Image 1 (cartoon, helix red, strand yellow):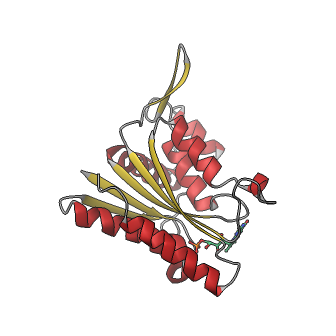
Image 2 (tube, protein in one colour; image 1 turned 45 degrees about the vertical axis):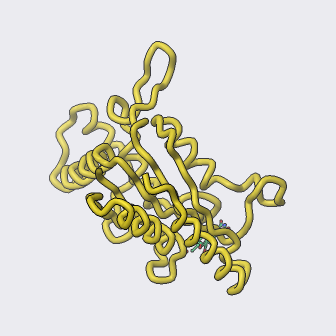
Length: 202
Ligand SMILES: Cc1cc2nc3c(=O)[nH]c(=O)nc-3n(C[C@H](O)[C@H](O)[C@H](O)COP(=O)(O)O)c2cc1C
């Protein structure tokens, strides 16, 4: 069994999503010591944003050396994702959605013929065999009925992306209200870490 752990917060040691994603990995590793771990930090080793040249190369155009390097990195990210049985993703909210580094990664794993396909009945997910657990941290509150609910494009977006590629075992652990104040931050972090400890092992 392979577990892919990904972080995307730029706040490194101060990051809540990183603390929670680590706790999730620790919990799963303790339950299944034979788990093979792979780790990807999207802030220290970012993938480039897609360009016209990327798309041309995908259609068979010859890539220059610099682009070739990035294409190889993107291919490695895709293969690593495809090989994983479990994906643990640290996802902070920046400007109401995911960090751009995480979007650049998603752009490399949303590949027709690899993670989804268009068939007679429309799009079909090809990555249904994975368990994906997302550690979310948000400065404010976005629950149903809150004034900012319509601005929630982090969890809703990730649900859409992973749903599109067929992931049905999609779980979220959220730490909300992180910027409301230190007490609230502590409470939200403690509760998210507790949820990580209580996760189903398999
Ligand atoms: C650049 C930036 C943009 C942010 N934008 C939002 C936002 O739109 N809504 C929100 O509720 N919190 C926002 N926050 C607060 C973060 O979501 C919050 O601090 C969260 O804990 C970040 O996750 P992390 O601690 O793992 O980095 C933002 C923080 C940063 C650094």
